[in-house]
Amino acid sequence: MIQLGDLEARNAALNAFVDFDESAQCGDGPLNGFTIGVKANIAVKGLPWTGGIGAYRDRIASRDADAVARLRKAGAAIIGTLNMEEAALGAKTDNPFFGATQNPHRLGYTPGGSSGGSAAAVAAGLCNVALGTDTMGSVRIPAAYCGIYGLKPTRGAISQDGLEIAEANLDSIGPLARSLEDLEACSRVLMEWNSPQVIDNIALLENLGDVVCEAAVLENYGKACAALNATDGFCLPYPLTRIRYAGFISTSLALSESLGELLTTHPDGISENLKFLMTFGPQRSEPDLAEDRKILAEVSEAVNAVVEQHGAILLPTAPQAAFSHADRAPANQADFTCLANIAGLPAISIPAGWNDQGLPVGVQLVGAAGNEAGLMQLAKKLDGQLSAYRQPPLFYGK
Image 1: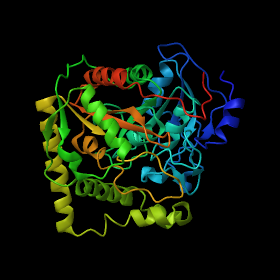
Image 2 (image 1 turned 90 degrees about the horizontal axis):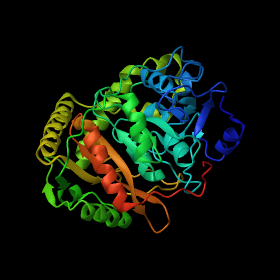
Image 3 (image 1 turned 90 degrees about the vertical axis):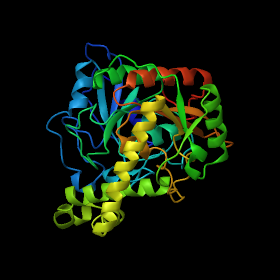
């Protein structure tokens, strides 16, 4: 049985875990010895299954989600559930009902969202691996902000069974880890792992779509481009800001449908901010909604075509490093990450370097559907050249 006493005390400074399983233990299998935390929108039998929503604080999962069951069967110890943005819609993990999660690289700073608890717990060594969910970057952005590794798999590669869904067409459950080896080990359990298709050509977005990026992001992205000898450019049919907004509208619509009843039955269990975000989709005119759908379809087709031609795309993960919880979240955080969700493609974020404050920045690789194995090989090659993983000041692992 896992001893949680010290873990609970160490978690106090970070507020990464919201609930622990006191009976957690490892079993036999390839993941024996792994401790795993699970984002609170993924069901863990016997623990609150909240989705970060106050109205669901007393909802107890009657069974494990499929992804959790697979990890448990493979011998991993499922030690608890992790803090997240309310309803997985947000970018800071400053939850109005469960509090703010701290970045272990700097207290007072965001670990990213919406899987902020997952990234902070892994980065701080509170668990080996965590499950997060990624709607438009919610695994990869926290991975970048916390200086670790995160995988958003091919759409549908990991079952959504037992997931409190934000937007079914965009959502993916994905793991976060402190090494690509651990990320791969868990991914092989969570999904079918096909033979790798070798990737020998990398595409780059021309001028990064004119997204304004911090100097450290540009510098370390340039190092990644040089490491992979990536020079081929491509363009998108719409500005990244507009593409991201179309994805947000789709998510707002989906949440207004799935959570709308709570506005009547448990109005105090949803924050005013989430209520506000849920109004954007329903208030959109039909012509605008039609344009949003057109944008998402055309961008999906365009990104898939680029990957089919080149094999992979290299992008910054986020345009900035982590920022203070006191600051307003930059609107452009998901400008780069949203593309993989819209296109349904796998993407891996890896540490790329640091800014002048010692905060990590990341880059991501986007690959062909079903080629997680080939993308992992490429990520290992790039990671070996960048060597940018660094333990944070608040690290409690071995």
